Each structure stands twice: as structure tokens, then as C-alpha cells.
Length: 144
Image: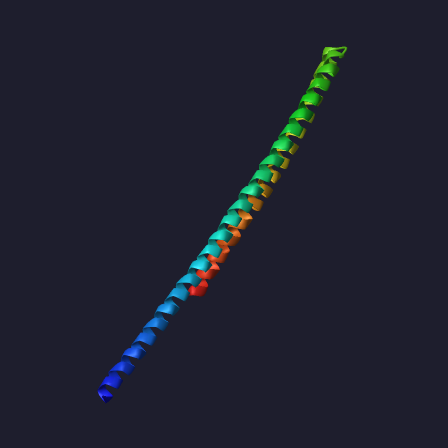
């Protein structure tokens, strides 16, 4: 009888240990799944934030381009009017030279301004993605 009790006790211990191991494995798997889901959600949020920042940058760049185009056309019309009222060839040359210089300076300023807008937009759109990469690297280092 003692042998039967020992076998029964051993089987109960194995069963209890097996159930606990199974429960622990399921809980660990669920926890890992929840962590992965949270990480994926944060990645998706970062992509959305990045696309949103890029869209805002593109909208700003488009608005700048439209404003510059409008101003350039207005300046060209004004220059054409002043050229048409010139009294001599010398005055036409001076007006044309002045207009060309002013137009080139405005163009260079606009190119610089657009470059700054593109750089800021790129920085803003890359920031959420860089943060997620940093979080991933930190998570991988912590797992070591």
C-alpha cells in the first residue's frame, strides 16, 4: 500500500507541476503577445505621425510655391508695365537689368526658404520613426 501511495503522490506532484508549467507558459505567451501588440500599435502610430508630418510639410511647400508664383507673376506684370512706359532704350535696359536682379534675388531666397521647409518636414516626419527604432534597439539590448 505504501508503494501505491508513493506512486499516487508522485503522479499528483507531476500533474501539479505540469499544470503549473503549462499555466506559466500560457501566461508568458499571452504577456509576450500583449507586448508585441503594444509594440505594433506604437509602430503604427509612429508611421501615422510620420505621414501626417510629411503631409503637413507638403502642404506648406505647396502653399509657399503658390504664394511665390503669384508674387512672381505680379512682379512680371509690374515690370512689363514699367518697360512699356520707358522713354529710351537705355531706360529699358536699366529697368530690365533691375527686374532681372530683383527676380533672381527673390528666386534664390525662395529656393532657400523651400529648402528649409523640406528639411524641417523631413526632420518632423523622421522623428516618430527614429523614436521607434531607438525603442526597438533599447528593447533588444535589455533582452540580452
